[in-house]
Image (cartoon, rainbow, N blue to C red; front, side, top):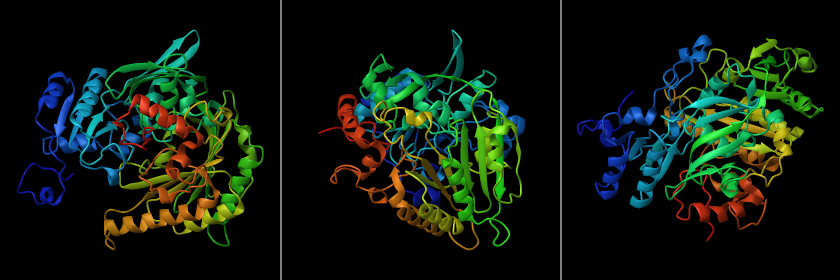
Length: 519
């Protein structure tokens, strides 16, 4: 890894990079340093690059038995998307809640731009010139059983993998994300889609209680009974209302070994079903009264396309997946009982555990109200010209997640039928084109795909990238409103702005998918 801050004035690389401002050496910084139990590194300090990038996972720690050893030591928090990794002015690796409170108070008093890094999959966790509150030392995850009911208690920096490790062998589960390195803070505060949502709801639907540091540095514990407005806000408010330092989730009974079917298709002309046919078959399976205990996912890599079906109810059997084996001529069709924690939850990394690791990405997504033939045709067309190192992942939504009323939490678009994740990547080393050229070509492909799909979108989920308003539509509510807000929060946006004014009137928490306080 090449240092880009160095501290060495003779380093040409350091001179070529725009530098963030230094922190003012004043009474605010002195007060912070005197109370901080964790560490603080500033741009130019030794250790800055390590603090900014984390320790990148190797392929080896993502395979076989190495997965079972998951811990902050074996799988450190890493900055996953290098394309959006800016140069913060400083990074505070907080040790506890008191450190978080001290950092929040410091930013409020000094005017420093506050950013929060949990799992570091967000494009807003390492913002240029920001003061980063890094939660990687707060990765605790503990299973508790109270009167035969399971609970999961997690620190604010916990990852999906930490939660899975705590739940291993307990017979309980909740909806967690698709990547073991994703932070629970970002996942939950955006809503939390995942493989179990059709039977267990979104991640936020399992949230029982949370501990939150507000913009004035005070600590609040919120639940349905205590601070219900704050509890409503954080369940879908994308980090706009405070730093969550502890989550408590109420869990569901679960069999860890689940029925699984994978069907690998190679869309070879004249020999195998086309991309379009594979997409429409997947859509037809989803819409043919598929029971909510069946989770279907279509993974579209440049080559091949993979249908994945799992059954997530306690007691489900392999026979339940037989109806989905009738189509096409798959080149491989593994079908059996698999360990959800140690196998299925790692599938996103690919069969060799070498995909979706830390690299340069442009991840974005859209919620679709349906998949008519025209939408399938568009997706198939763009899949045929997909840039290398990219993929499209199509999830069916609904079930228990859609049972919850739209105004029960701040997540509004529970009626989305499908979630299309566009995981765009590009080569940063090539004999034929520069990284900048590859990036430009890839982003052009993403924009054209989303533009073509606009007629079929009914919302967006969270903020995977820094999408611009013109990337979305402005016909959901008032034409003068913010189209990004409409697409994300719909009719809940007005209440969110009112409560933002109550909890964060100066918009201290704005390195996120931002909600502006009501004027």
